[in-house]
Length: 221
Image 1: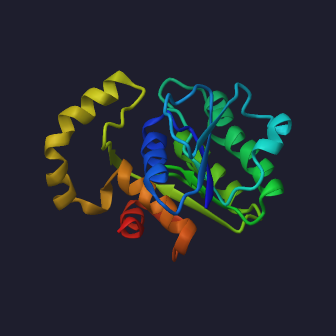
Image 2 (image 1 turned 90 degrees about the horizontal axis):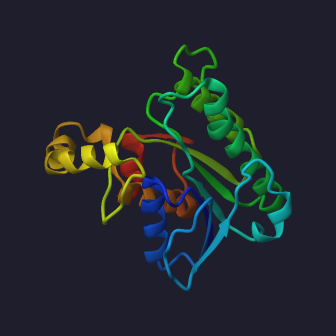
């Protein structure tokens, strides 16, 4: 299969890209981001862009793919709703609407988050924006659309967050991750499991379109 990864320099995106590059079923990976990953792999091609709201000039680069893993995102801390919506909702929809036109048989996977509110009436800003984005993506006529709602994600295999504070927290939490996994398996996952699950839904589908943390781990297995 040929896949596109958005946000491959973020923590989740790094993990997903790693799994794509070591999976023999993946023939080619196109990374779309604002900065290069720095990786050298014969199956990897990179498209560096600054405008994620208009893909009209690069449509020829985005055609002929089987799957898209949209891992691009930011924290809502300190953000106004307008700015957060622009990155979370508007950029995802701009990419997805372009891709569904070029690759209608594609499977599109969007990384949301545990607690996302798809009711449209939620009072928590980030959850409402995530939910609105989920609903809009699920309505697009791709072959399939899946929404991933992970809770706590433990980075593995050298994956790092862009946020120094988060890296410190993950380093502190790493020794207790096995305990968390044993006590609350439905609320913890890893970057490796996220990547394996994304590839899994493309190859084999899933019983639900919105996968909570436990569903992600089940597909990864």
